[in-house]
Each structure stands twice: as C-alpha cells, then as structure tokens.
Length: 302
Image 1 (cartoon, rainbow, N blue to C red):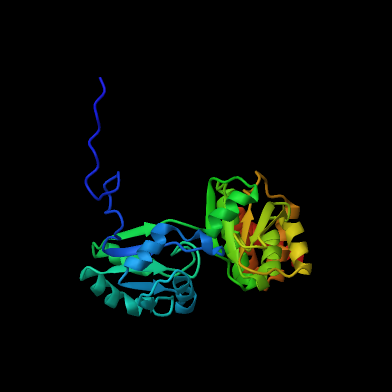
Image 2: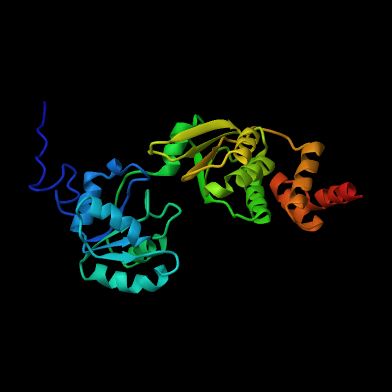
C-alpha cells in the first residue's frame, strides 16, 4: 500500500528548513568566487541582498563583487586585527534580530580567513548561524591533483621562516610515522612557493607525489603535477603567479634508516637550528629516542 507524503508547508523548502526567498535572521557565512565571478550562487546573492550588513575581510574586494551585481548594502570590515573588538557590537545586532552576512575575500569563510572567533561567540550565545556553500580552493585543488581525495588534512599556510616551517613539518612527519596516512593540502603565497616546496621536499621527502594548483577557475588555471623535488626545481626557476594551493600525497610506509636520519639532521642544522634543537626536532619526527638522535648528531658534527 502506498501512502502519500505530506506536502511541504506553504512558502517553505521541501525540507522545511527556511522560507523560500528570505534569508533567516542570524549570521550567514557566504562563500564567494575564488576567481571566476560567474561562480557566485543565487543563494549567496540573495543573502547579500537580504543582509542588514555584510561583514568582509576587505571592503574594497567585497564592495567590487557587490557592485558588479547591483547590491547596495552596509559593509563592515572584519579581519584578524579587529575581530575581537567587533564581536560585542555584532552580537548585539544579532540579538536584535538582524541578518548579517559574512564573506571573506574569496572562497569559503573561516578557511584560512577571519570569522572563527565570531562564529564561536555567536554559537556560545545561542544565536543562529547558517552557511551558503560554494567555492573552496583547497577542495578544488584536491580534486584536480590526481592524488587520493580522502582522507585529507588541510593545513593552510606554513610558517614563512625555514626553522619554524621545519618544526611544523617535523610534527607532521611524526604523525605520519605514528599512523597518519592522508593527502596534505597547503596554501602559499606565489613569491614564497619555490622556497616552500624545497622545504617540503626536505621535511617530507623529495620523492613524495604532489601537485601545485594556481589561478583556479581563472583563464590561466594550471595544475602542475610531479614529485616534490621536481616541483621545487621547477618553481626555483619559474616564478609563480596568482593564488596557489599545494597538494602532497600520503607518506609511503617506511623505516627510518641511518642515511635518512643523517639527512634530516643535516637539513635541520642547515635551517638554522642548534645541534640540540635539531636533534629534538628530528627525534620528534622519527619517533626515535632523543638521546640516540643527539648522539648521532654529535657524531656527524665530529
């Protein structure tokens, strides 16, 4: 026997989650194009039009996007330097029933962009938080890389200084030796790409398969694939332009041999770490006893 399902409530979506054509009160995280302006969704545009104010990383960038679509709305800067100061005022507006839209310069808000502290504060106050999904450079680069799509670990930007970057990579290697097997995703500025890839090759191994995706969704979109060593060599000679995402394949199963240990110690010292700090960093990355690694470091120095 077939039973007819109940029709949706009037003026509501089939799931009954929100009125059609009206953005609900509260904070809405709105994903914006990462390059191609045609990627702004109808829901995203409606959220901007319905908003009492749009919170944006850079009013010039978001203002240009809104003007392109004929949207005139109050914009409020929200970035890492003023987010804490803005939160009390924004919470008061949300408590008064206003609709606030949050947009970063490009892509999905909070992903290596401001807004996390505001979202946490709104949730803590029991205020409604929703999102309009859309473009995300990290996920797009992952799908185009040809590397295993899941599981993946998104890291964002690595530290720009060699010693700090090496320490972070040592932590990742330690997690991999403890069982982590995931494709890694990083963001990087184009002028630092060659140095960053060289650091990845040193810290993770030059043979690791990787891909560099840049200018995604734009006219000169490019995905270059190869080993970390090959990509580091290429971008040491060829300047990158545009926004960059680096995707690195999972670590192969391996055992740490003496030659590998020596290479990691030499790379740590070359990055500016003292002998003791280099030994500590490599010991954490390899899972070997710190005393053993330090003794090997002393032997190499001798």
